[in-house]
Length: 223
Image 1 (cartoon, rainbow, N blue to C red):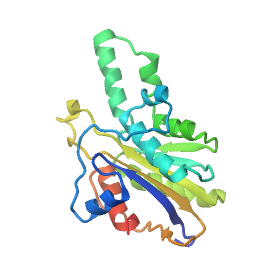
Image 2: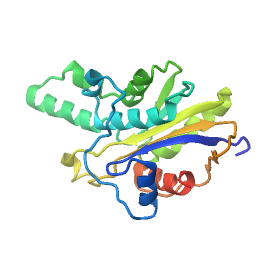
Image 3: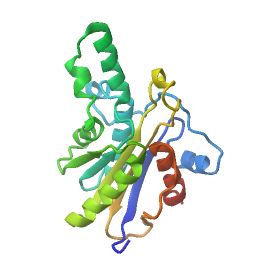
Image 4: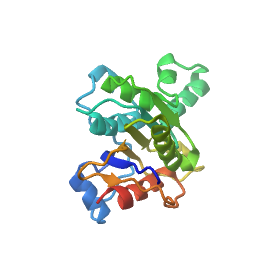
């Protein structure tokens, strides 16, 4: 890039892989991601709110907190391939069984639910956007975040990607079990000691956004 962007900090989570040491083991092939509907612990989130959050939102809230805690609050770009698919499935079930949808289910099923909940937790009023581009969600979301940062002259922005385990009811029409994964990158236009320059050259080829995100994370973020 003519205007380089740097990764100041990252946060990553997947079932069975959480700490930097565990991610190093995963990169070396000594640890695998569990394809299970697990969620990260969120001790920093109020219990009443925490109980309402879905898997994909808990993952997004967790990784965003890693790159936001103790640092200036900045704009966020969120992307996902499947989004709140488990919440959407619950809504479909309610429609079939009861011919109705509860406000609670609907309010946390929309595209921006994960990122909006993340900003609520952090008290971040800087603004956010949500990008859904199917299997290209990771690449297009990250490029959108970088382009927005450079065009608007922001010194830093946060990019968050999150995909949860899809319901097994979709196993006949999609690859199941898919890989649940969440990644947050705190991006900066200024280089500091230890920062990694963001490489936006040809992205790894993958069938799904989470697979592409994992390969990108392994090859261009983990050092």
